Length: 84
Length: 370
Image 1 (cartoon, rainbow over the protein chains, first blue to last red):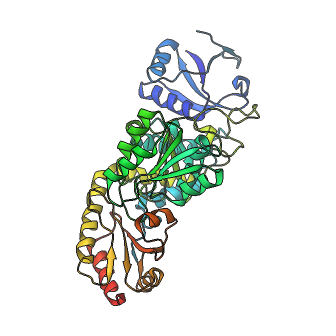
Image 2 (cartoon, each protein chain N blue to C red; image 1 turned 30 degrees about the vertical axis):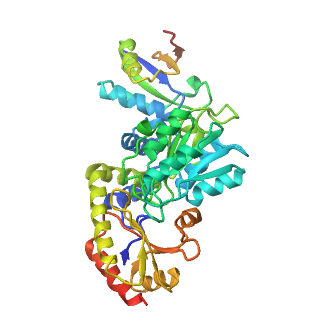
Image 3 (cartoon, helix red, strand yellow; image 1 turned 90 degrees about the vertical axis):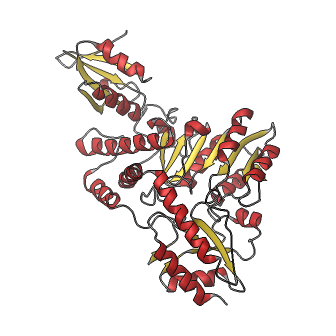
């Protein structure tokens, strides 16, 4: 499974998103956004390991929580932005 | 001490509130700044509080802004909506927390509705006072002096029809009466955390139906590269280190309220009000202001003939009974009711009070009456 980071514009949104994903059975971790993906300087993200990003995004979309950006993390620590 | 000053602050909290404050002081760091365990615990405490408040007031968690009290929240709301010279309609029972910021800005204040316990008159007055150039309507839900429950639902409807922002001062109603951001379509609802919501002093909530303007600017733990304040809730209105122990206590207070139910609180308080009124009517040389339990919360003011209200309060305090006297930071309310010169003694009860508290108050009043 790949690890993804969903970033949100506020900590509260990130917490809301993590809670929504957890309710749907995803192992979503609310955390400080790694600096390299924090485009605005500081922020919070939801880290999630999954094979199907679309189902997770569907959960968030149903609650009107659209991530600001999505990043995929490779095993060596590199992250790349995901454009859907 | 028999505590009958709940309109000022709630004195005795549910036990879980004290525990929550202490636990937070021992285990929570600052929220929104770091990623370690103690910081994430603080973030979870805050989020949990926002969720509970959102559920209670029909809002989303991000619409719940932590403030230090209702006055802070009202200042944010007023500064967001009002410019110098703007026409603002308020009720005749507003607290200084509304009037002073408006005066400070230089707003043109129109006070509508000055008849106590007359919702029809109040609503008619608002209908007349709200003109096309009205920039905002700010209304207290319950008078902190007289307990008068204003017809805010109908006033909010007037505002919605006229597309005029409506601000509710829920200082005396949060935790006692239903308050809904969704139903009122309010721009802002301000409330303290330390009265009906049973949290510690130094806490408050501003429920935001629209984006406020920043009252203060500073660090938010977000958008750090930007020298401007964030333009999203709740960060736009929360700067500096949060009062995490206070928020933890407030969260515990909200949990307690959710478990007991606001209806149960209201019913108990209504019974106490009726009990108090039935005792007061037997006393001579005393005038009290009563509108019935459907128009009044458990807040009641009275005056004693030829006796200074502060003297009455002082003598009650010496007997171990806590009330408040004077103008209650609401001179406009006293002006409307005709009690500005003498002030009143205010008894404000909560669901923690009992009929024996009322009996003790009455017994001591009998000693004071001329």
